[in-house]
Amino acid sequence: MSAQIKQKIKSIRELKNYTQEYMADKLEISQAAYSKIEKGPTDLSLRKLEKIASIFDVPMENIIQFENHFVQEKTNNEDLKNKIDNEADVKKITGLYKDKIMLLEKLLSKTDSELKRYRDKFGIF
Image (cartoon, rainbow, N blue to C red; front, side, top):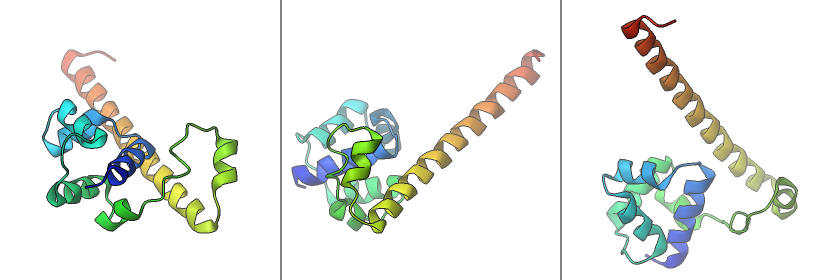
């Protein structure tokens, strides 16, 4: 796979606020091995790309066609607004942030349930 696709994978991962460790865990590989996927030394098979798309919960074609010109640079929110050209881009970004919020809510819920379990187990309130 091309270096552009690997950059797109990295951009989507960062937009979803997924760590390399999270991706590596889902792919059942080490973080170092995952890093090599994004940086280029490791060839990315079609099967691995399909699995990455599944983790991102997007069709594989969305990764290939992903336009990341507005996320390659580290910009503040004002710069980002200036680079968004149309309503479709706004919808894509909104969807990604909704996914991020949903993921954070799941993580918070899991943390709350673990905290409750420890409180029940050790009698701490």
